[in-house]
Amino acid sequence: MSQSTSTPAAPRLPRALRALSEFLRLEAAGGVVLIAAAALAMIAANSPLDELYRAFGQLPVHVRVGALEIAKPLLLWVNDGLMAVFFLLVALEIKREMLCGQLSSRDQVILPMVCAAAGVAVPALLFAAFNHGDAGAMRGWAVPTATDIAFALGVLALLGSRVPSGMKLLLSTIAVVDDLIAIVIIALFYSHELSLAALAWAGAAIAGLVLLNRRGVTRLGPYLLLGLVLWVCVLKSGVHATLAGVVTGLMVPHVDRRNAIPDETEHSPLETLEHALHPWVAYAILPLFAFVNAGLSLSGLSLGDMLQPLPIGIVLGLLLGKPVGIVGAAVALRALGWARFPDGMDLRMMIGLGLMCGIGFTMSLFIASLAYRDPLLYEEAVLGVLTASVLSAVAGYLWLRPALARRPG
Image (tube, rainbow, N blue to C red; front, side, top):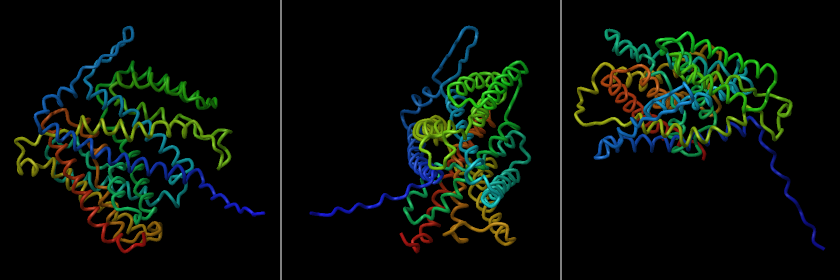
């Protein structure tokens, strides 16, 4: 009679680690799709398809319900509508990180918070140094301040398994804090022609969301319905409509009785919505945003265009300002004994991470679309963002490849 032996099951990862692993996997894969979408836009804009490409972005889309009418070209439906869904996901991620993730304790938060703040301030100062005499150009001072986590993780994925998990985690946390700072910047500096009546209705919708949260409502339907109402009100108010996604995300509850146990299989409403949205944002919304916004025609461009103060300010802000701010802050914190580098990271790898954070792309293009109504200024900004993002990606890859080659696989 044979005796069978059974192999004990592998221990399950804690929920937070499972969520982080899934987040990094989706972001890295989404980054590859994002790069492909941007490349496709550049090809279309510099080929016989250019006229068709421009017509696609200007395709009129009208929605009318009774007396309410929203009529915008497809480009603005993407930038004002679909990007509100992206910001909803960003708000969900920020709330989760602040409640039970990398932003939930002082020891975890000080390094990415200070690095992110320095990585916003130094690029903005560099941009201002080149553009302070031009009031129109200075509207885009925030363009070189953000990091595109999907693009950056997509480049890191090319370096294989030798990339330390601490680097991926720090990069993603800095990018989340970057997004939080960008939300505040958009709210404070990129609103216009405010409508008090629409703002009052938006306030009523926010009050409804707060009431749902306070009453312990865990069904997602009421939050999403009120979030849609809030989006329409904010769209009509003069405040940028994407902020409706932020408010809605922050109101969705994270912890209820069903997920009080750490290894419980059921998810909170926040986790459920985050998991549902993440693939759509990574593989559809952000690539579509990149496709309709990154199509810069290179015909007629010269080296002189690249050397204009606006694109130079963006390129230097992202390519130089980001790593100087982030690495300088990290080194200062370590010297003061207030924080340490993540496990597996030394100064050389921190410099590589700083270079990767110079990949602005999605958020930089988005802020540029808010800052510049003048097509010439917007094209210069897109030129700067695309150039800086490509140079940062190449520099970060070439810097990290030899450093990581000495690590065990």
